[in-house]
Length: 171
Image (cartoon, rainbow, N blue to C red; front, side, top):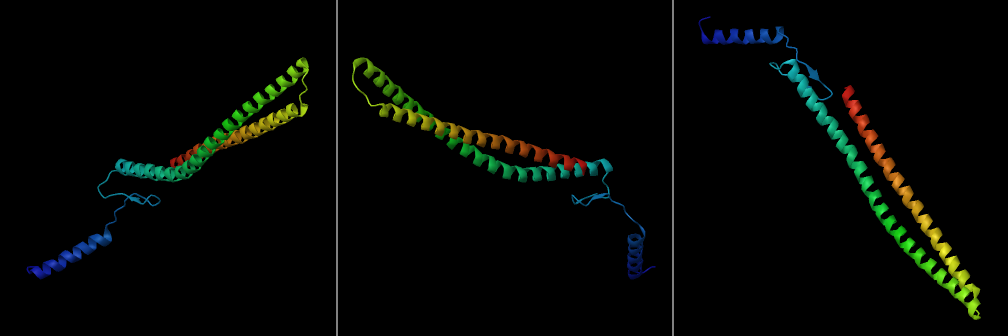
């Protein structure tokens, strides 16, 4: 016992005995890779698990949102372009209707003044106005479809976000 070498051997044997005979139980959350510390209380460990869970859930939501935001942004640009198309077609329809009214007025005025006017011009203006109306209506339908798609995609994003949050709450 008296020698330093003998004391070192006993010290080593004692540490080996402690290492192999004493078990230390630490809480762990393998899914989140959060492990308890030897002097950490249970509430502190649960707090760290909750923080890790919140961070993991937020990370998953952020990844999901990035994909949806990209698709929603694309739809937003399509809607803006389609609104411009609708506006141009409404302006064209207004012009065609004005031309039609002018041609109809000339035809009626010609009846009273005795001047002959071609009815073909009036029919042509009416046909062009009808065509412009159909194009405008078609453009409006496309716009309504895009807006409905945007609304559905936003609802889908909200639902997916809720599902992720619910899944993380269950863990």
